[in-house]
Amino acid sequence: MEKAIRHASRHGSLALSIMALAGLALLSVQLWSIAAGYVLLLLVPALLTWLYQVTVTRDCGLVIDAQCWRVMTGTEERRIPTDRIAYLRVTGHGPISRSVIVLLDGREVSIPFDLAPDPLELIRAATDLGVPVRSR
Image: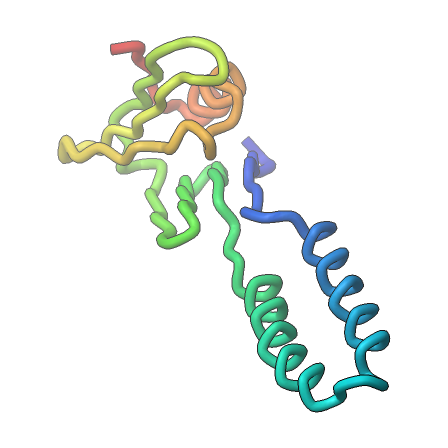
């Protein structure tokens, strides 16, 4: 498998964040002539909060390549070497399927259902890498 399969997303919406910034800027322009001090008092914390949310939001998802599988949940990122995976267990069908990576030592790493790609795509990627797939 030459290329990595990446199924990732970010929480929130960049378009919504830009619209909020534009609205905040327009409101500041309108109120500047009336109460400049209050505009600064409200604008600076709001702008810092917006900047923090846009820059610090982490990716969530699953990245599979020949060397390792990365499970990113937003708060933590686990790197699992492909040669330490015993098998992939997929239960259920359709968009609400549950996928679990079972390691050689018996530990299980659950892939949250909202982060996992389509089950068939996940099964195809696992079998391409020689990882067995089980349904139970």
